[in-house]
Amino acid sequence: MTLRCAIVDDEPLALGLLQSYVQKTPMLQLCGAYSSAIQAMKALPENPVDLLFLDIQMPDLNGLEFSRMVPATTRIIFTTAFEQYAINGYRVNALDYLLKPISYTDFMEAVNKAIQWFELSPKGNTSPVTDSTYIYVKSDYKLIQIELDKILYIEGLKDYIKIHTEDNPRPVLSLVSMKVMEEKLPSERFIRVHRSFIVQKQKIKIIDKGRIVFGKEYIPISDSYKQELQNYVNEHII
Image 1 (cartoon, one colour):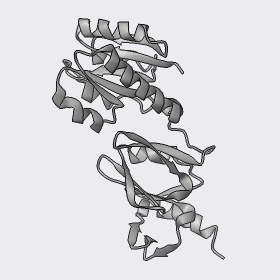
Image 2 (cartoon, helix red, strand yellow):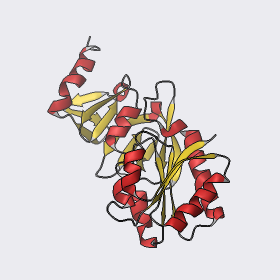
Image 3 (cartoon, helix red, strand yellow):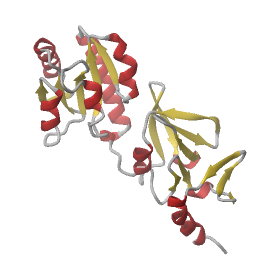
Image 4 (cartoon, helix red, strand yellow):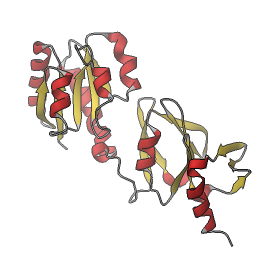
């Protein structure tokens, strides 16, 4: 596997070092090296990449701000001299975080993590998984396989989602938006019933007073999604 990548760093020495690392790494193809996030913001839409090595501390537009503008299909490895940014990096779902000065060993560890991610979730695409029986989600710095058949419902929190399954009393927590999850799941099997809830259609056993019942849990049905759910239910009413 070869990943298309780009580098964004306002320090010429750091930019040059990462360029040299990429150029001697067979599984990477360098598609751009930018000295500011502004440059990258203009160039990347016309020249998209799989992987972005992104400095955090930059003028005008810093790496954390720019990372929120990057498409979900592009994964990010943060590079910075400031260790306190590590937690912030993972809050925007970075694959890894490299502390300067960056050794080639550390660089390769991050690259191998990216290769693994793309092999398990090809191209990191968000197209529906209609030809698969499972998905992979990142949770607690690990990739976890979840069988679609086991999913009861997905609950959206502020920055995370909880995936509730029928074979595990504890939900899987992942830093993914509800929008991305809704796009990833096959619509013929899953339906959004609330801003904060997606449920698997075939797992809906009881609807009581405008709520879907899963054991002791009650999932609200909002007005904006009520008609679509009603249409599905009407198809199965005897």
